[in-house]
Image (tube, rainbow, N blue to C red; front, side, top):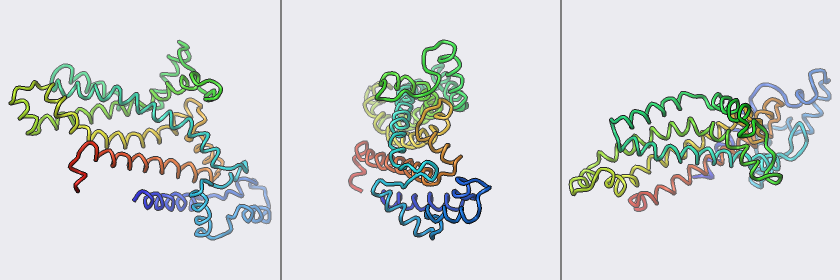
Length: 304
């Protein structure tokens, strides 16, 4: 199923980008180029062949890890994507970790104190977090924590080989910017999931046997509430990967998002196709991991 989904996704990616207006050969040579030069470059790039032939060559190369050569620079696309992934993936994972560390206990806290001042306080904060755009949060964090107070770099990325700590430090503000919105959303989902479980009969039975609300939640509720939360975590990781496109440009990080924006501006289709396919494959892999995790959380699913 994973392979079939990835194949369909590759078809969609290739078809959507192939029907976009504009010609890469004209973009490379400029509008003053003669039709003969444009035709010759189209032939060299293989753009004069049928879409089916172009797709077959592209997808067969992608299976081998070869995404072709950039129309603009002439360099291989795969090494560019690999280098940028070393920034984008740690950024998305760090953002997810920060969101989870805050949201999971906050959601459980709010649910365990339903309709109290603590619940209202967490709900108000989460609503504020949802309403803040990630790029605006990034600009605020840069203005105060980087420019005024000098606690973090305002942008750029030194490289893991140059300085591991400096590289990690440069990812903190972008990760916090991504985590604010996702953490607020996750908090509300955790709160709702825990409240739903607390209304189940098995929790009421545990309460009737003398367990307190918190003990019943810890022993019987959290594992059942984790199933919908895991689903949201998988969806949020996909949202974080998409959010890096904006955040990486705000913080001038040379990740996949910045590479994608630059390739779109230059109409470097093979780079755009390669980056989009890698992001899609990552999201599908996360969803597959979520499905496998369901079996660990709910043994009843193993017998179906």
